[in-house]
Image (cartoon, rainbow, N blue to C red; front, side, top):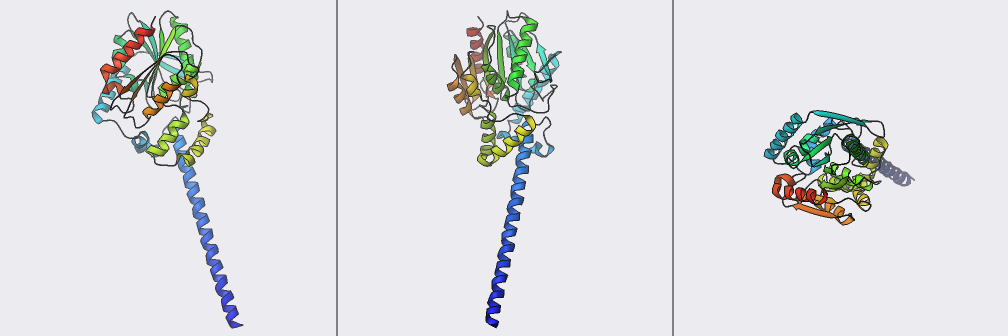
Length: 334
């Protein structure tokens, strides 16, 4: 009888230990899952919130796959400040969802055309276009530089990765036509998320005065770029991370990462497109421009700048860039 009691006591002890271990593992799993959800919520904030969370300021290079050369950054800053100080007319429109959108008008004397130029994610009109501004101006372009919603002086609490901004782009084109008429050719131009914006906006019907689109290193969809950054730059499984991050984006910004793509828009597009991309882009892979080019059913041209990083095609191959853009204007101004 004593031996039986001893065995029973040992079995009970083993069961208790097993129960404690299982409870500990379950608690650890719950804690890990909660931490993961918190991390993905933070990434959603980084993606779309107007204000970048302070905790991730130092992560920006990691998110984009690496920073640009310091000398190039200094040049961009200098050119940006020069453009910012040169452009003096501030204009504004109301978006269809009630936001005040601000733009900056830079007219050229004896203008040959008008360009609506959309800047990229968490950037500015003067930073993204400061280096190319002189070239555009000297070739007879009057340029409208909008602040994308939730950036710069424009209203809004959330960035829409082109899904929301495509409507703003269309409204800016209408503003240009209402103010300046339809005698001059009008072009849409964008870099990075701005390129995605103008490509997504290509799905709309435009009057004949809108002649074409210049897209510099645009991504194909929010899903595509978020998945790429998670997997390649942050080394996180996009199969797990994307659905969670997308849930939080949808909840706070009212759009879905899967609801719109440049590929879908370009299948409907009727405007000629000049696609530009650097083949060393660590943020938006050049493959996305190849996908956009393949999907485009309208007249199309492509410039791939060897060795150029994200948004750096003009720096790396200025003569090739100028030649491609000038040739594009010459073919389609008529």
